[in-house]
Amino acid sequence: MVASTTVHQFLLDFVVMGYYSITMKSSKSKLTSKYQTTIPQEVRELLLLKKGDEVIFEIENGQVVLRKATALDLEYLSSVASTLSEWNSENDEEAYKDL
Image 1 (spheres, helix red, strand yellow):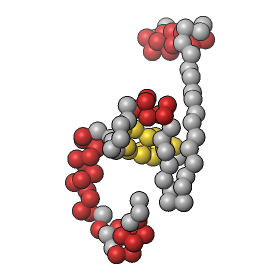
Image 2 (tube, one colour; image 1 turned 180 degrees about the vertical axis):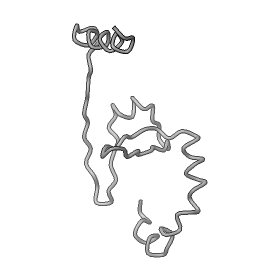
Image 3 (cartoon, one colour; image 1 turned 90 degrees about the horizontal axis):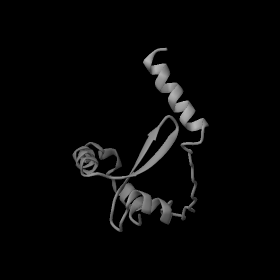
Image 4 (cartoon, helix red, strand yellow; image 1 turned 135 degrees about the horizontal axis):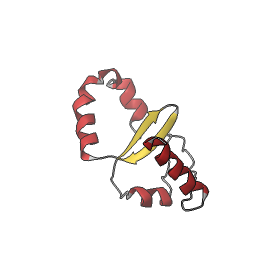
């Protein structure tokens, strides 16, 4: 038996034998008219979010992942902000002023 097959079989046995359970929880939140929402308490606790923290929305393969922003994320976003001039108009300011 090849090593990768052994590891795969071990993991399969581990899950099937009940040593590990995969748990998925869902929470919901309603969008306001300004497309704002409250992050549910359980999610805030899991991500260790506090008031004023920033979050990152990652989109990959049609799914969105929400995570707490790190210092590296914020540094990167700050460095590319000047390249996003297409969203820097008076119309945009008016449209998004209440966000």
